[in-house]
Length: 255
Image 1 (spheres, rainbow, N blue to C red):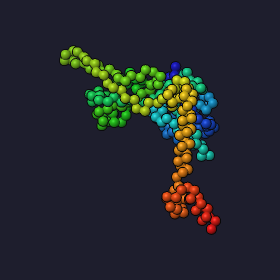
Image 2: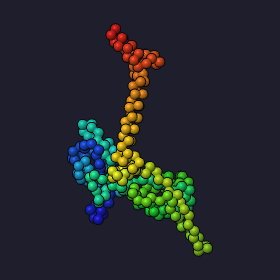
Image 3: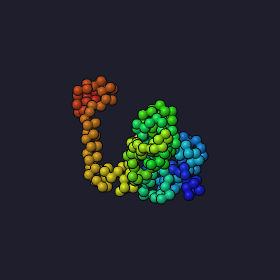
Image 4: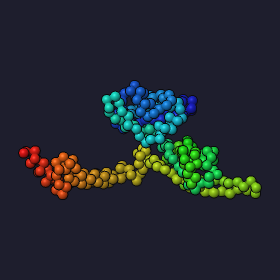
């Protein structure tokens, strides 16, 4: 169905707080996100735009960054996060589909071909592309591949590789460890990407207070430090307290 509706390379752009006008988005997103092929952009829901890419390369590149700062003509910045299009899209929920790099460590160089690595990666999700070092075989100790996967799925820690011995007409099974590189987090409570249940402020309200206290402590430490700007401009000694610096500054301004 997605192929019939030209949605196989579709991405949802979710703006955190406001967004430029649709006509302006159609002009600036392809330029600022380095889109090479045709791109259709339309308003999907409030703060959500649907981007349909003609090229698979543009689809992959758009999903390669967790967020973008879109700048309008007035110089205002708008934070946009790309999400893989899901036919079950809802405004209050984010899809659990995401892209991530996975690595197969200690994989024999014999199996560094695209077909072999994609076959292993299919046990985790949909293989998208190999990284440059794997293609050029410049890092024979590790093979990396980008996959589209379900963050709520049962992600395996090992995949099985069946190795056939043509001379003895037999085979053996080797376990290959899967390493997930920078796997996005997903909260089942909030239905949002970016954090999990352990970091959820709704499930753990005490986290808000802890973060607030940490921010206040950091702010107090910054205020207690002598200003580098003042020391540089007025040649004030570094050992003086902030109160002494302010008094000396006022005296010099008065004189």
